[in-house]
Length: 426
Image (cartoon, rainbow, N blue to C red; front, side, top):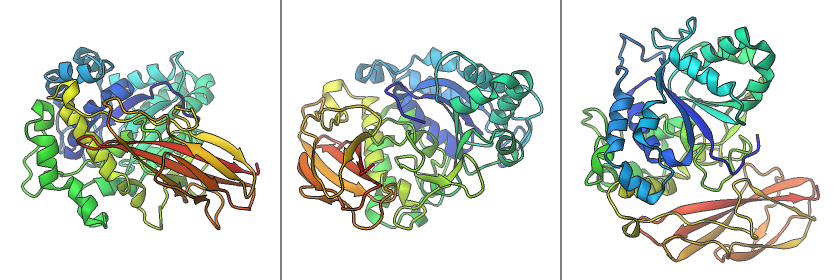
């Protein structure tokens, strides 16, 4: 599904586990980046009404905290939604039991209304718990609007963390084979409870450590960030944000990862599940199941820190991300360039700007895993200049993905990207 310059439409369903509650704090700090259509209580095989249940008011409690900082946030970006708008989006879905999808609920019907409206998609259905509320919505459409199933399958994209009940395999996949499902079975874990065992680089692990979290997020950053973590936890401050990749995927940072599951971005990278039509599971980078997410952690954590600063700082006292332009193109979709085998081309990021007037550092790099060529990669002659030349391999019929990372020198340093796809001999 091609990316557009429109804001992604998103619905988050959540079972209220502690990692969900931590993820929701960050989610609200990025509420300006999406068109939020629903915040839905759901269940999972770990949490349902009467079993390790966090209740059905914690989202509203976090919105109350958001309300206390929203004026500051709106000074940085007027697109932050008003708290009452967010409250109107909260609904209770299928929470009575693990995998329960027999009954229509306010939450499932809210999803139905969005999927059947006359606005274009895609609509990203984030599943932080089980898929049962989403499954109930899809069943309602199947039963009451069977003539619109193909339309809905084209419009909706489901991003699942772990697969936390039986409804994906037993209902969604058999009955909605055309529906795109991104299932983070494993990759999400690098941002979950065992992150310290899965990130190999200690310098990257430090971005989730107590000192970094306390300094940049929790202390002196207002009541929303001050609620992190959301329960007593004696071992560490970054308990888990296992559900955060479900929306990191849709933050528009310039990687164009919404265009295809295999491209990769802050929410991970995917490959088609063997034997399925449109279910995608985690791909590896450099042979590592978790690198498709941990490779971005320094950049995305510094971005989180900047949002925390926005909660308490005036605009001129905080940092804001650069805008990356390549060859005059600032779109969100990847920039595609047709090239001949063996050609030498120029790619130019000199029109990139920073809203705060910060100095910019540039890095061009080749992303081999989403590239289709294999063999010798393109040669980037001046990887740290904004304008560089690239020698394309002689082989034709290949795509090579180049990433331009642009980082400002503000505090904290912030990075945005532009993906360039060289279509060689196509």
